[in-house]
Length: 116
Image 1 (cartoon, helix red, strand yellow):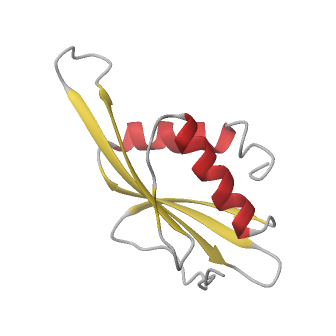
Image 2 (cartoon, helix red, strand yellow):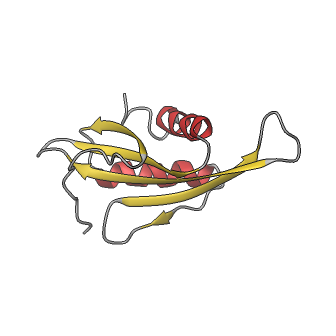
């Protein structure tokens, strides 16, 4: 069984988006992994904590020969006895592309009900 860590606030040194949910962390983690796998992204899943890291690389919209790479960490943390927060943290890469990826993930068929 994985350990659900307590949410201790937002890390000021990085850019994070947070979503509160009452769904069980196992279900949220499973659906995030399904989404990433469906997008042909291989996530790195922590065995002991609710923590997923992934890298996404794609071509820039306005430059033919330029690519960008984004690294993201997703943690599921305990808020109280009934709620968890899903924390999406940009580790590296352009902010606008990171925001697009997180918003797409939140609206995906796997996670739309969890984040509604």
